[in-house]
Every structure is written in structure tokens, then in C-alpha cells.
Length: 448
Ligand SMILES: [Zn+2]
Image 1 (cartoon, rainbow, N blue to C red):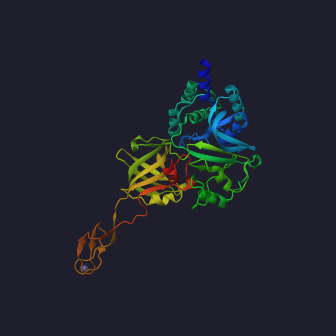
Image 2: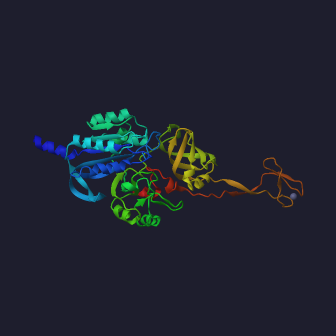
Image 3: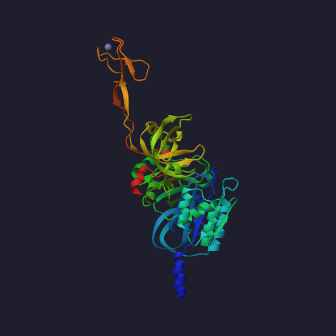
């Protein structure tokens, strides 16, 4: 009886391994480090998918992409699916698994991998490693993706699950590692990441642009591959990191084929990750008076101050909802999205998705839904003279006109027309080249 209970417990207690904050703008990538973890345990299988979890994108002390990684390793059981290749070895995801291997040993190996690869000389790089048989509470993920979270909160979660953990330097990486373990997906996407040979790191990437376009057209379940208007390959990063490119999709099944369609530099390894990218998990619906810095919010309001283009090409306007008024911005990097925003007039009703910047306090728009367009009458001609029928001249006094022929003076009577609007009611979003990791592109909104 006792043995049976014990084995039953063990079958669900697969060791979870989590990592965060090992990379820097100067190089490395925590996703690569996770593939090194998988490579270092050839006797262990991946249960489910490795996870790439993005956290609150607005906090000022975040690392490069603010991604935290985790994986469940054990002895695989049930159905399996190929999810990657590392050094010629095929990696499979198993639907179920049982505990295997020594947690303490696993922990020591992962710590030494972080010590080998992490960019310790960057002051913003503060790695965290967690190995646990139990997951922290789900609420920790929702806190970490939506607001700033303290290191103390993360550590008390880890203590309550009995995890083995180690934080380096200021230990902030423990927050992301804990959040990654606590994620139970409601919405999910996938990303296949291909990595470069070591000797190529830091050198320009060779990716055939046409083949990226072909892949984008052939695989409609993928997203954010290519920006057609700005001719921008969005799948590849611009840092000296080990990533060749990453292809995002709402389903994992065709990702290997999509990857084979992209031509150029040969990859050294590739891996499919389960992710919260593109889920809008960070977004919280709020009244304007309740908005705080560093949050990502959905707010509905009426345009109060009309759009104005300021130095640098940024477009700023404000909306109010009866509880407050907030400045909203479409910054220069959002390119043609600014043309949409410039069409707004006072009285239009919009719903905005965006990140809140603290200084100056501004909502940085990622997506906009135009709910109502105000009807505005604009003058197209001065009135005609009631006596001779000629067009009258403005007197300079507001609303008064005089006929040059007859000397007659009238007030009002202009010919008016409804203002022609350059936008329609409906959804608008920033272009692919300006997309943030967690933002749901309109293309996949109905699919999640
Ligand atoms: Zn007249």
C-alpha cells in the first residue's frame, strides 16, 4: 500500500527546471542555455514542451527580452512528438512522464551550466536557477506578467514548494524562473528557435528574405514573420546572440516544415517552445484613474485632445473616460500606425491596448479598436448673399459675413459638409516590425 502511494506520487513529481536572466544585449540567450540543459541529460526525456515565458514588459530593470525558461525532464511515457534536434540527436516531447534521476544532481549540473554560459559581467544580468518537484502557485505567474514583483515574493513561493534554488548577484532572475514554473497556460502559442554554429555568433546572419516571405505565405498558422510594408525580417534578432531565427505559430505541428522552408545559414540545433508570447496575458482592463506605471492595460475612452506630432515623429493625443484623462502615444517606431492615429478627432471613442510608461506618464499604444467615429460638420463654402446670390466675405468677426455688392451683413448660413474620415470603425495595430512579444496580433486573435 505504502509503495503504491509512493510510486503514484513519483509519477507526477517530474523535476521542473527553470532559468532566467542569463543573457545580455552583448550576447547569450537563456533559450539557448535551456537547450544546453536538455543536451546535458541524454538519459532524460522532455515531458510536454520546454516553456518560454515572457514577463511584464514595462519594468525598467528587465533584461533583453524578459524571457524565462523552464522544462520538465523525466522518463517519457505515452505518445511522443519530435520537437527539436541538438547535435544530431532528435528531441521528443512525451505526453506523460515519471520521475527519474537525482534532483540534487540535476540542480548541480544546471548551476554549473549557468556558471559556464551566463553573461556575469553585465550588471543587468542576474541569473536564477530553480529545480523543483512541485509547481509554485498559478497566481504568481499572473502577478509577474502584469506588475512588478519583489524578490521576496518569489523566494517565499519557492520555499513553500521545497524547491532547490540559486540566485546570482542581485538574484532577480529567481523571479522569472519562479514565474515560468507557475504558468498554467490559458492561451498559448509556440516558437521554433533555430541556433547558429558557435563560430557564427556575433557575425551577420545569412537569411534569404524571399524564403521568409514564402514561409509566411505557406504557413498561415505562423505569425510576425515578415513586415511587408517596411521590408523587415521579423524572425531574426539583431543582437550577437546564438539565435539564428524564431518562428512563432498558434500550433506546433507544421513548425518543422516552416523551418525547412527558410533558406540561408544552416542551424546547429533547433527546438520548439510552448510560450505565452502573443497571448495578451499582461493586459488588464482598467479605468483611467486606476492605471499605474509599468502596467499593460486595456482602456476605453473618448478622444479629448486631438493627435499632435511632436519632435522625433511621435504622435500624442489624450482620451478621457469620466474617471480621468491620459496621454496616449504612437511612437516613431510604430511607423504607419501613426497615420491611423493622426486621423482621430475629438469625440471619437476608442479602446486602447498598451503599456504604461511612468515618466512622462503615457500609454504606449500597441493595438486600437475604434468603437465610434464622431460626425463633424465642416464649412466648405461661405454663405450666398440673400439678395444678389454672390458668395459673401467673412468680416473677420466669428460667424459674420458681408456682401461686397450689396453691403448686406448676415450671421451664419455657411455651406457645411460632414468631415470625410480616413479611418473606419474596427481594429488597428502596430506593424510587425514594432510588435511586442506578449501582444496578440490581430491575425491570431480569433485562433487563441
Ligand atoms: Zn449681394
